[in-house]
Amino acid sequence: MMANLQELLPVILIMAGVTFLTRSAPFILLSGKADHPMLQFLARYIPPAIMTLLVLYSFGSVEFATSPFGLPELTAAMLTVGTHLLWRHALLSICVGTAFYMVAVQQLI
Image (cartoon, rainbow, N blue to C red; front, side, top):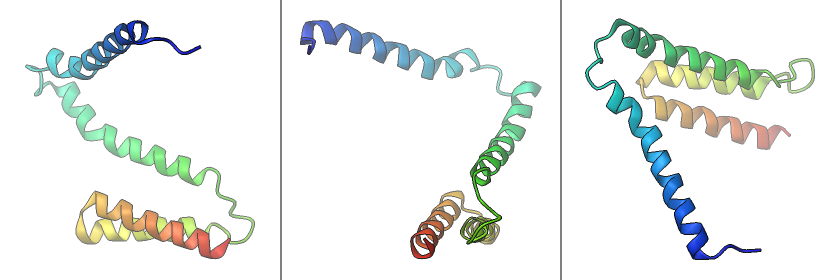
């Protein structure tokens, strides 16, 4: 049964308020602590750690023992890294690697 607007509106407003608070809380709570050593450590090492986990997760389901032996995935990864080393533009690198992978998978399978 569909709820009416008087029931949905308070729920939507509460959800919007909670979402706003959770998004703004780090900026409010950590406004004067940007030079704290722990935050500097996290800012330096968390992004590479997350990228490493994403790459490992991406290659977790690749079947290297069967044809095409992970060729589209490995080639796309090398193209992504090469593009990034050449131009140092993360979005461009991701788009080039993803586009190559999608075309390779569509053509090989």
